[in-house]
Length: 305
Ligand SMILES: NC(=O)C1=CN([C@@H]2O[C@H](COP(=O)(O)OP(=O)(O)OC[C@H]3O[C@@H](n4cnc5c(N)ncnc54)[C@H](OP(=O)(O)O)[C@@H]3O)[C@@H](O)[C@H]2O)C=CC1
Ligand SMILES: CC(C)(CO)C(=O)C(=O)O
Image (cartoon, rainbow, N blue to C red; front, side, top):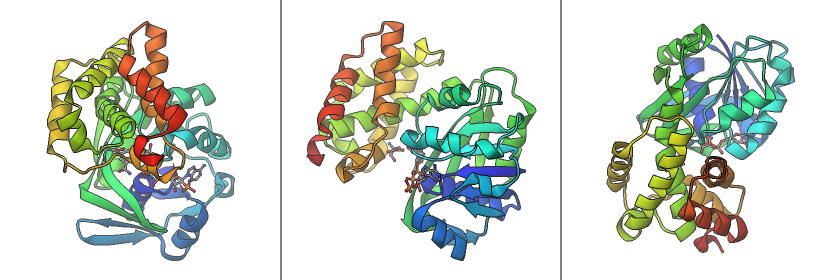
């Protein structure tokens, strides 16, 4: 399968290395010092004590250089880079090219559909804990990744095919016909914890122990918006998130809080602003999310100022 992967970071680098190793034709869009390092040594992933390095079929910071059209494009950038990334792949997209966002957020497929109204678009999410250790090298914590891709309703063959390809590459994958619910299940945890850790300037353990009422409140706000957006969610999903968060080491940050601390761009719009925007559309009250979103937009995280 000809697959373009845009973004060679924690998510895209991992997927590229696994897919290349499995013999897929991977066209990797990378930039800056990552591009130079990957050109020299391939894309490397450290997983289960092993380092796998492999050379993509083609590599560039400009997808037009690939000079061929793709069966699928996987978007693995941060949410704030998605639109630019999508515009950049136009030269390698034909009418059949399947477009799949894998970054955090539930509105990414909507964005791609707006930009490519005539293309097949699936939604997606990835469970992984990974980061760029050094240029061209991605370190993965734990056993690997779990990917969900799909649509709501009958699954098109292009999505089934991508699912088979990911599985053949050793990536645990679910091809879902209720993808809205699946992406919201992941989003519930990420949006709540990214927002609260950033808003209070405290790690996940402190949110569970010292801000339990706020955690409950924000999860209920996100749940209400998710349900209005068509996700099948109930109290059990909230209980599951609290159970999961209670198990992580006390000091665990979230990537959005780290991005606030680093003073760079953040996924605030995708992880907090999106809830406020959709709550307005549906006439739902989300006072805590709104308070945190507005404070973070104005002043950043308390520990980053
Ligand atoms: N890493 C993780 O553990 C997880 C991450 N996620 C989500 O996945 C998404 C990606 O995260 P992650 O991989 O960690 O992010 P990274 O910052 O590690 O990687 C993103 C990469 O995309 C590159 N990029 C951005 N725009 C373009 C473009 N137009 N063309 C080519 N490359 C581009 C960035 O380059 P540059 O550095 O130059 O900006 C960067 O190297 C985010 O939404 C994140 O929240 C979800 C689950 C877990
Ligand atoms: C699961 C969690 C919250 C922490 O790794 C995450 O994925 C993130 O911070 O983006």
